[in-house]
Image (cartoon, rainbow, N blue to C red; front, side, top):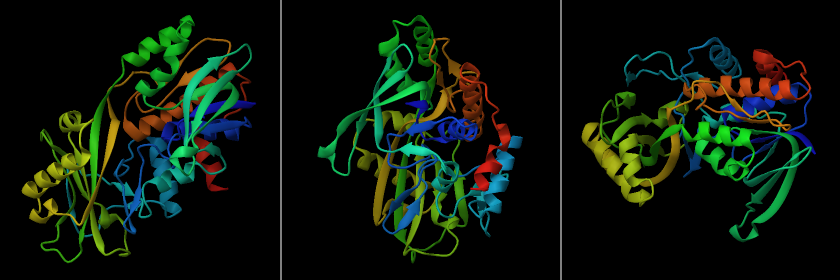
Length: 355
């Protein structure tokens, strides 16, 4: 039996897990994807990289500033500058990972037990433990199998609609029913991300690294992703194009390839004509990309005999930075309901750096 099972290996889940792990709890993270990081995501394709989720970090609060400085000291992050420009309002320092933004999640995942490709299908409440039913995806689609995990406490560090789908069967418990009502109030905007590769010989080359679009019906962001990588390691110039929420809603359950080409066509009209004709392209659907109606509190919790807490960037908003604070708050609440051990707080980053 584990002390705590955490569903989701995004920023909130990893930060929560580190807090509890460093306090001596036996923690297990269950992640439905093959990698860590959630929306801090990097795709490896055509012998190159593309950051198709969070494009950069722009620290504001003290905790995020400490985190970014630590990652810069360890050569995981660097300032995204070079000799080009950002066509972005309020262009303060932005930090990127030359090895891919998911290097941030790999750093946070050090020392943690993580089961990947594990989708939590159901949770059952027993007298002294939670029982989590999992669907495991093996290396082949035909090898899916069911398994179970037993834990004294559960943290759901996933988007609110996904947490709701897991918890709704438990609404006969009045406290869970109240929690589900709060989860229903959270709303997200979707986004489609196009990763596209081009010959490095194309002209003209961009005189910008990233462009954001305000009130554009189709485009939200275009980034020259290859400009993050430093020394050239690929024959391709890679661009990431992210859609507006309205455009994503229209294509969310439609042909993603058609949507991708439409996004590139729009980007070509606004920026570089050759963006419309990539040598290769992939499209990723972010159904829960950005909280549009977050909760104005750092976590949700029940007062059942068994601790159950929800957290994520939709608790308080503010994207990555908000997710970090939500993960810490969730750990504090779980610890309060369990053994009230000494948690590391913001010092957890230094402990990871020593591993």
